[in-house]
Structures are given as structure tokens and as C-alpha cells.
Image 1: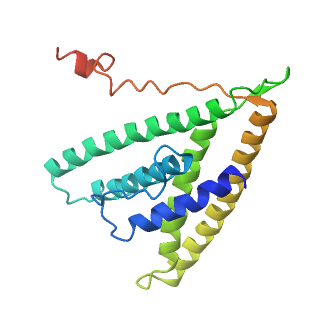
Image 2: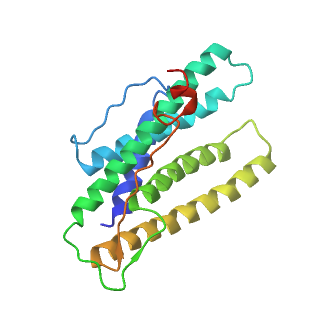
Length: 201
């Protein structure tokens, strides 16, 4: 089994579990053993799924400004949780392949495995919601056709991205590529680096 053959069904499972209630306040019920890679993949997609719906809600033109501010704070926290989890998943790969000696001509990839997996998780959400659009009964045939074409592209993209991720992991395992992970160092969350925050001291 390739890594994306592990990922993709877990992402679907998480999305389906969320939509049993379709409520951003639904507590997560992660079915996998704590601290396993499956646990982290499910958690990663759950965070993405909740945030997807946060982003829908905050775009309501009639949202109460006070409620919007509270939601913006939740989105900020969700973004930080997402980043932290991506870095944790990269730590899994770093540990797994720590004894692999890169070949003399080994190259570095444009992104780490976990950031590519992050895109795969978001892609699973796009596929789920675009498929929903193709099943709506309150829209025109043209809407269905447009969304069906977009869905086909998303499915092709999922296949291509899955292949690329599995190739990257195989290359790391074989020493043809090496991992180098840079922490995100987001400045706007840091009271020592955001001038709006440290200026208020």
C-alpha cells in the first residue's frame, strides 16, 4: 500500500463523519489509535473540514460583526493547528527515514511530504463539495455540466497529486531526494514579532 492509498480513504472517512451532523461545533471522534499516523491524518482532515465550513460561514453578507470577529479568531486558531499538525506529520517522515543516507546527487523537493499531503486533504474536500453541486436538484442543467467538468478535473488532480506524493516518498526512501523541513515561523501570531501586538506593550 502506498502512503496516499492510506491517506485518501481516511480523508473521505473524516469528511463523511463530519457531514453526519454538518456542524462546526461537533466534537471530533477520531477512530484511530492516539499518536499513530492514521490518527494524525484523520485529525488533519477534520481540522481542514471544519475550517472549510468556517470559511463558508464568515462569508455570509448578513453575519453579525461581533460573531464574525469571534469566528475570525477561531479561523486563526484553526490555521495554527493545521500548520502545527503538518509539521508533526513531517516529523513522522523525518524520523522514519532518518537512517537513509542521501545519494551524492540527491536533490531537495520544492515542498515537504506533509505540505503536499495538506494539499491532498484540501483536494478531498473540494471533490466532496463539487460532487454535491453535481447532485443538486435546485439548479440548472448548465450548473450541473459546469460542476461535472470541474469535478472531473479535481479527480484527475487527485490522481496526479497522489502519484507525485508517492514518488516523492519513494525517492526519499531510496536516497534520491532528501528532506529539509523549515518551520513556518508565522509572525502575525507571535507577540514578539507582530508590531500591532508588541506595540501595545
